[in-house]
Length: 471
Image 1 (cartoon, rainbow, N blue to C red):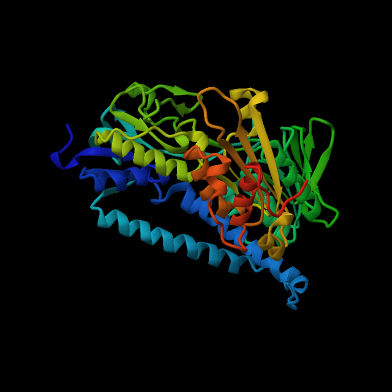
Image 2: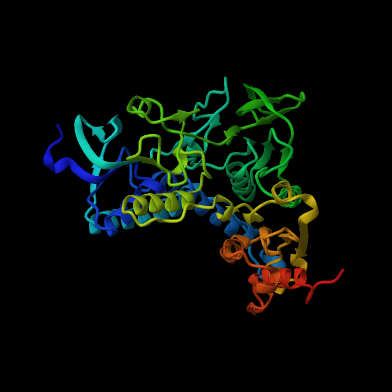
C-alpha cells in the first residue's frame, strides 16, 4: 500500500511540455500533483528540441547577415563559426529557461520526483522502488529520435538530432536523411555555417505535410541557397568511406541507385513514442504501434488514466503538448473543456526561409468539401514593403471554401513561406479558429510597413478589393 504522503489527485509520468503543462494547470486548479521525470523538467522541447535548435537557427541567421552585410550597405565579414561559442550561447538560453521552470514547479508546490517511473497499476506509478498513487494518472513519457530498420545510429558518423545538438565542430559535409521539419531546419543551419548539405527524402516533396505550394517554394529557395536534395528516393544503405580530403566519412545509397558521400549522416526520419517496458499495456492501457490510444479528452482505455504529447498520435509539437496537458487538467477538474481541433494548430518550420501554416492544405480542403467548393489566392511577398526591406521572397496562400451548404465562405487554410513568417501564424490561427471570412479580415487595418500587412492584403484581395497586387 502507498504511504499516505504518496497519494495525489494527479500523478504525472513525464515532465516534458505536456506533462509539466498539465501539472501547472492542475496545481492552479487546487489539485495535489506529483510530477515524475527521469531527466530534467522541460523534456525534449527545452533540452533536445525546440529551444536549442532555434538557438542554432538564430546563430545561423547572424552568420548569414554577417556574410551578406554589404548588400545592406554595411561592411561585414564572416571570419568563421566558433561552435564552442555557439553552444555556450545555446546552452545559456536552455539553462535560463530551465531555471525558470524549476522555479514554477516549486512555486506551485508540485511534488517533483526524479527517476524513471513505470505504471504498476491503473492508479499507481513506481519510481526508485517507491509507489505514488494518483486518483488520476497522466502518461507523458514523450518520444525519442527514430531510425530505419538496419540503420544503426552510432553517435559518431551516423547521428541523430540529439547528437547534432552537441557537435563541437561544423562538419564539412552532411547528408540528412529525412526532409521533414527536423531535417530542413538542420539543413538550413549547416548551410549557413558553411557545410555542404544534401537531403534525402522518401516522399515527393520536402516538408511533405505542408501545402504542396509551400513545399515547392521551400525547394526553390533551398536550390538558390545551394542546399541539395534528393526527393522521391528512399534510403537503402550506408557504409564507411574515406573522403577525398582523407577524412573518414560515409556513403549513403538510395533506391534509385544514387550515392552521396559526406562526413556525417544525420538521421531525421521522425520521432517515436516512449512506451515500451513501462507497464502501460499490463495496466489495461491500449497501445497501437507504440502510441497510446486516447479519446478527444486524451483519456485512455482506462478512464482515470490520460496520455498527452508525443506519446499519442497527434501533432508532435510542444505547443500541442501544452494544450493537451491543460485540456487533461481541466477535464479532471470537471470544467468541461473544448476538445482540440488539431487542424487549427499553428505549424512552423524555422528554416531559412520559414514555412508556417494553420488550417487545411488545398488538397485536404478539396477532399473534405469538394474541389468545386475551393477557392485559393496567392499573395507574393514582392508586394510587401517590409519583406522587400528584409530581402526575403515568398508567398501567402489562402484556401477558402465557397458555396458549401450550412457553411460561411470562410478561410480554412493559411500557408506562408518567407523569412519571419512564423511570427504571422498567430493571426493565421485566429482567422482559422474564429471561422473568419475574407471580408471579416479585410476590414482590419494592418500596420505599415509590416509583414503582417501581407496577410491583411491577401484577405483584401480575396475579398475582391486588392491593393498592392495586380493580375
